Image (cartoon, rainbow, N blue to C red; front, side, top):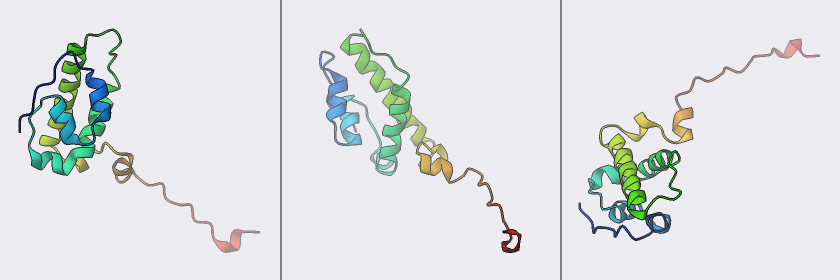
Length: 114
C-alpha cells in the first residue's frame, strides 16, 4: 500500500503524535506496508519505532530531515517484524518476562518455624 506524500514543511512529529493508528503512521511518512504484517504486529512496530526514535536528537533540524529520520526508523521497525514475529522480538516487558528464568521460591518447612 502506498500513501500520499507528506510535505517536508509540515511538522511531522506533531502529525505522528496526533495519529490514531499504525496505518496513520505509514500514511504520514509515505511508507508502503503489507497489511498482514501490520495487522499482527501494529503495536510492536510502533513500540520498536519509539525505541529507535529515543536515540534521535531532532533539535534544530529542518522538518525534511526530521521526516526522513522518522520514516527511516519506522521502516527499520517494520522490517524487524517482516522477518520476525512479536514473540521473537519481545519488545514488550510482559513478553520478555515470559522467557526469563524464574527464581524458585524458597521452601521453608512448617516445622522449622518458631
